[in-house]
Image (tube, rainbow, N blue to C red; front, top):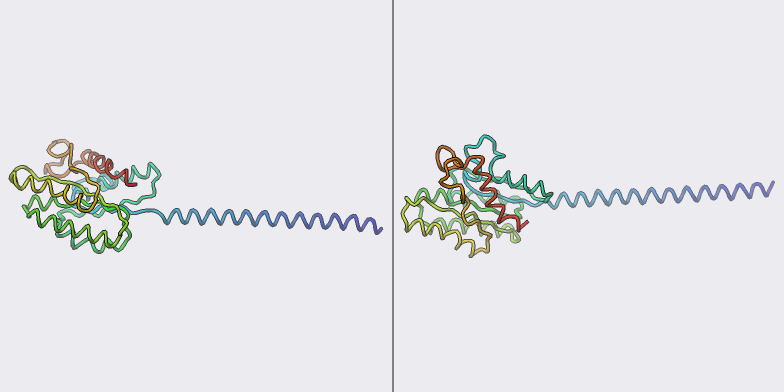
Length: 229
């Protein structure tokens, strides 16, 4: 009888030990699940912001769908590549460099990892002095850098119609390369390259791109932006 009890006692302790091992295994699985959740949470927090700050060209003036504007097209490209970036369209139709200088402050309440500056066209069409435009754009960049020291900077170059006069045309065109060099900004030489002056790529006003024109703008910007991602 004692031998039988001893035999069953060994069996009991064996079952007890097995149960303890199973409990440890489940605990390990729970820790792994928690680790995965933490990693997913960290990954979600590392999404970076790309702020597109501009005028009607950025806002997508006259388009049937805001998703046809070039910042949204770039977002679609980024999503297709699985890159952790969020494109924020802060375009405002009619915006000048002076207006942008006043408006930028409240946008900098959120972190900005890449800043795409697309302003100056309305200054040019109004004949604003290039010195004033340069100063306003410089002030905008300074504010962005102060709020986000590690922010990468992109500048969209622009031109004015030849009807503004050759001297003003030249001064305006060189404004953007000078600014890009001063602040080490990646430069899109001419945002409207292969769009400006082409009838079927512009709306009836001959100024604002159509949806097809916006695709080309997205291509022009993406060529400069992609290496920064």
